[in-house]
Image (cartoon, rainbow, N blue to C red; front, side, top):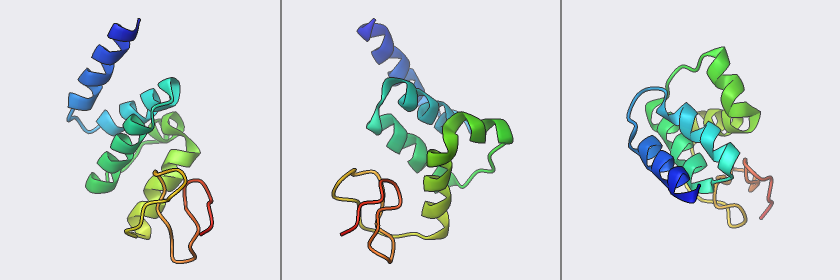
Length: 100
């Protein structure tokens, strides 16, 4: 089973279509992979695509919020706790809520 998962993950990481970030985030939630989740978020943040309602439902509110805030409030410092969120001006990680 692990070999199949690794092959599917490799195929998904190589996907460069517009829906690739959606698939990466959805898969990351199934297999609990921070690496896939971050790659999916990065794909959205870099390309700033318009999401359909179905895509928004598929990736979930947490991912949608992370994408929205990264686009509208860019920052440069990675969270020390979760390594996924970024600190906002108020020194609160916008992913896990950690306060510095």
